[in-house]
Amino acid sequence: MAQREVTMAPGEAYRRPLGVEHNVINAGTALMTFVEVELK
Picture 1 (cartoon, helix red, strand yellow):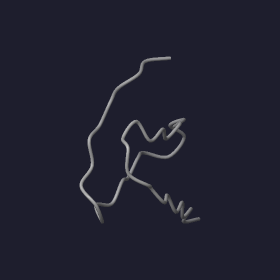
Picture 2 (cartoon, helix red, strand yellow; picture 1 turned 180 degrees about the horizontal axis):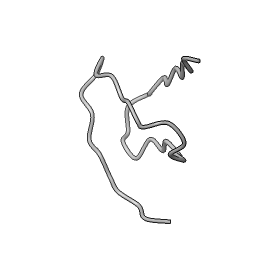
Picture 3 (cartoon, helix red, strand yellow; picture 1 turned 135 degrees about the horizontal axis):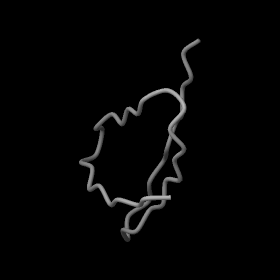
Picture 4 (cartoon, one colour; picture 1 turned 120 degrees about the horizontal axis):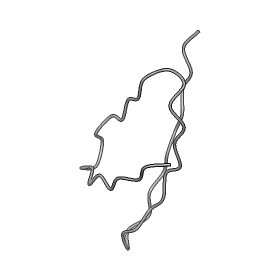
């Protein structure tokens, strides 16, 4: 599986194509809350 690192600003939305696996890891020092919504 290919890996990539993405830096996101607070409040920025993340989107991925249908069927793409993902594993969100907080590599920073600040608290991060991640909310996932699936549209069907």
